[in-house]
Length: 517
Ligand code: KIV
Ligand code: ZN
Image 1 (cartoon, rainbow, N blue to C red):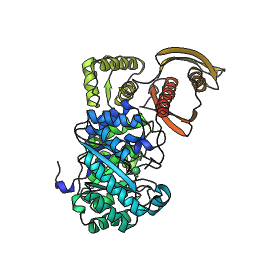
Image 2 (cartoon, rainbow, N blue to C red; image 1 turned 45 degrees about the horizontal axis):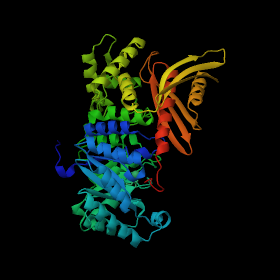
Image 3 (tube, rainbow, N blue to C red; image 1 turned 90 degrees about the horizontal axis):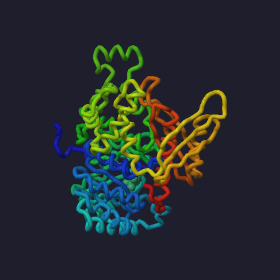
Image 4 (tube, rainbow, N blue to C red; image 1 turned 90 degrees about the vertical axis):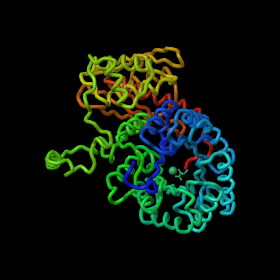
């Protein structure tokens, strides 16, 4: 609820699982997508773009399964202008209680001539055909003019008018290549509102990429000019430099309601945990100085700032940490905590697990509490994320023993379960991490190249869990894996094995040409 009228409500359209997943390395498996979808729904996202059903069987299945379990948010599937794309999207969305087909085609001279090799007339006809087809299959249709910000305004207005006539109720104006600037984008939205005769029958939407670091500013300029849907992603994930970050859009609207009197239905207190989940799933760490969700976003280092905040928080804080769900990394449970407290804590953190999963998590928590004095929220999130989302992995870590130190060669004894069979080996290497990774390669031979190995601590202290990110590349495809453990080497192997599992999923996906948008 808000003090502002319904006409000033901004629909939040999340595309983390579609445009976000197009970031190199950010692929997600089915369990991960289901968990993210549930989290987005509890965050209060209005529309969840769950994938691009024609892109692969994995994408189709993800949209289909998400459609079965999500009841409040609208589930959306992306489709190019062709009949096959649209029919596939409709099929994937069949079980959804509330569904939307999002169809698009490029309208800029550059894209029409070189990418599509179509005349403007043919593109205009494709808009009519695609929107009509989608509308016959689904009541809620969104149409996007890809590369809208570099399109000819007369042509743009004509295609928008036709899309609305054929039944599109949302018209999205993407800044596909992150080229526009706020004043220009606001003018474009205003012009469309003034020139398209039937624009009152549709909601205008903004979709901005961040190539010039202007995605959020452009999106807000679009809202100020009359757009009432913003397409965005958690942590600003997305193609190249990413999409507009959901958390920044929503908190800007909330914090500066005096200057931008619009509102969204987002429960901002769920922002931090959603951001952490997306980071854990994709293996994309959030930079410490990232607005709203970075580790330093609410940290005050300078003495003069600390002094001011202690005297009155608003001297240096324009929003409270609590408003984005940031509680002081509170000490949650000790090794003597019981099941009841543990179950409550999981609920509070947003995990709804079945009986067996809770038991398993409880056992792992006890193991962790034995190794680590203080167990924080972040530790539990890492522990449960790992458990919930890795259930269907084909490769699993069974055990690891490493010989490290100043006298080489360092060696690793490793046991992996591969497709249900346990295999063991010993390998040496240039350091313990290299030895452990060589052991993985010996047990599961592959040609993927290690592109990134990064370690950071989940919480403070020398007994903190290490969170490791590993990026692998194979045939131009990249995947990220994350692993957490109090032992950095175990975390490293977990991260590598997760990345390998993702690579296996990715191998099964074969994306058709020109899918990226
Ligand atoms: O950036 C873009 O143009 C897109 C469209 C498919 C909406 O992602
Ligand atoms: Zn996009």
